[in-house]
Length: 224
Image 1: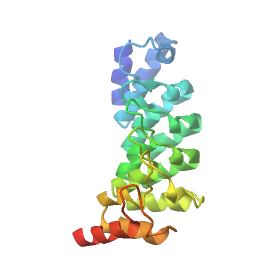
Image 2: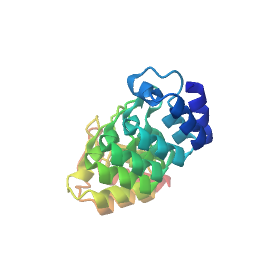
Image 3: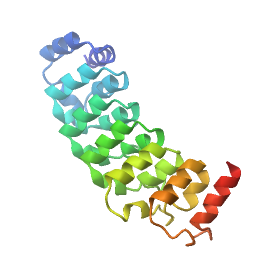
């Protein structure tokens, strides 16, 4: 029966879902207690973009949103990685605390959005749980460092606009660097210029490696 449910999730087959649940009222409860054999059908449906199937599963068993897979993480990790705003909205409405859930790599759902963009999803995650912006992922970076590392200027602009705390742009990574210093080595000139012009920093202050923010800007300008 578990295999039939997973296949139905992959196809987005609501009729089959209803038939399966009619035959086994507790099949979704098995997912919650860890006795379900096979892949989590909610995660399968999200991975294959079956939004209506996902919403139906969440309607029947809202607690499914909190189940964390050892490989894929929580449903919100998968939905945010796919950039599926409709599903992300449904998941955070049910379980906003999942915004700070960790996958097997120690990353939160915002991680992929900081790397790859998809502004609407990132905005929803931050609106739901602003404190996610202060979380350091296992690689030692904050959400701002991720935006800089992966040249996501639009995401960086959004975050600086949404978070009004003047200390936010000065968030440290695990090595004690802000986005104004070492991480800018990996950025395009446009994002370096934006960081320098849009945040209040001492451009001549040294970081742990002996560089100033202005040194980094000049280096990036020469290599661009």
